[in-house]
Length: 156
Image (cartoon, rainbow, N blue to C red; front, side, top):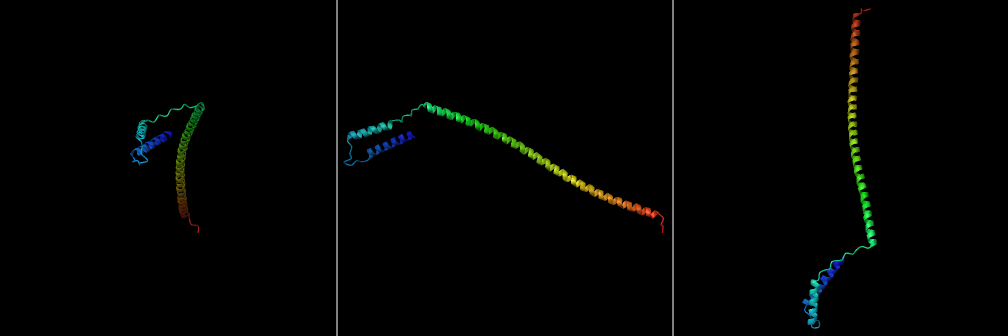
């Protein structure tokens, strides 16, 4: 940020000096050859001047302690993050297992319901068969009785 301000200031000053050299001067604004030479020299030096790299400051003991503290805090937070990641993975695994178990139980329930329906249908069929047999037995009994009555001598 400071380097940007310095660069901006230098560019601004260069532009001002260039304008001063280019603009026509009024009679009262004329420069002496010495002033013009001084301005040109100053401009030339300014253009050739390279920005000085910023010197790295060595941190103070307090700053080093603060940095170490921050690094330790970050390390602790990273460990917590890893712990939470493992917990999340475990939760996902358990959820997947539960979903699979639920799916299996639903399938088993559906199969049992189908078996129950088949058993009820078979029960109805057997009840119908029993009813038919009762009717057949009743008819046979009636026929046997009729035949027996026909064979018996009439008592009238």
